[in-house]
Image (tube, rainbow, N blue to C red; front, side):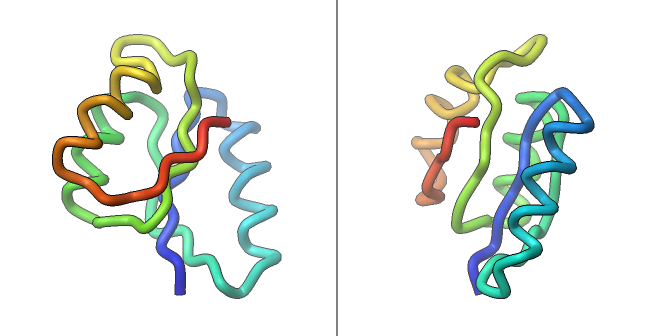
Length: 80
């Protein structure tokens, strides 16, 4: 099972990604976030295998979050 964290500040975008992931039994959506700060917290707590990460978000954007994540997470980051 591939644990996935879905991050996007737009609810419909998050729901669209989650809907597509649920169609593949290999993925387990372990969490979701709508900002970079929560992404960092959830990634350290949930230890996902892959993070679907929006680039443009208020506060800590996806690029800054990815830069911080690479210091302690081995998760594959897919920018959406």
